[in-house]
Length: 190
Image 1 (cartoon, one colour):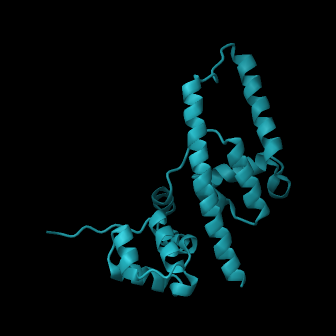
Image 2 (cartoon, one colour; image 1 turned 45 degrees about the vertical axis):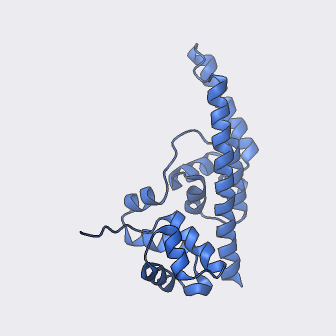
Image 3 (tube, helix red, strand yellow; image 1 turned 120 degrees about the horizontal axis):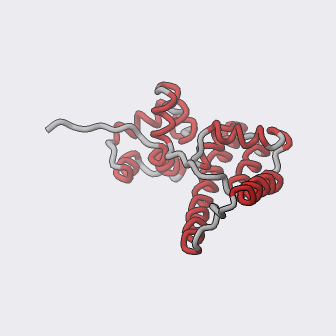
């Protein structure tokens, strides 16, 4: 029977990074993500070794060897709905901590271009303010509602609660991703 192979996903790289930080053996890490021990060993060796392994850096290196569209779609499932206030707060925080548009995009499951456009529309990299950006967006939506004659933006309560739950889940994921990025930057600075 022919073996099938698959690339290591970003989530699997995060598992490897956590395993390395907690001194877990390559064999145990391999079992956790259903890969061979040699795959884990090779992945860690080619991406800085046990002491310097970073999931973000490893995935960026992989992206450089792939075409842009394939790398981005394998890394995240990009979201195509309006930015929420919480996402705008994460953008603001990411900009203040020196993250690139691409890093912020990965954390929010958004395209880099979406982040760039949001920042450009709202006073640029140094002047971006989540509260002002949200107020501008709300103002635009209200203008559209008044001009349309129909209230297209009303959702039933069930749908709204489902969206709130999804945002809360995404925020937890984003916070953990942001911690990984900040930790890896601190390690590089040390």
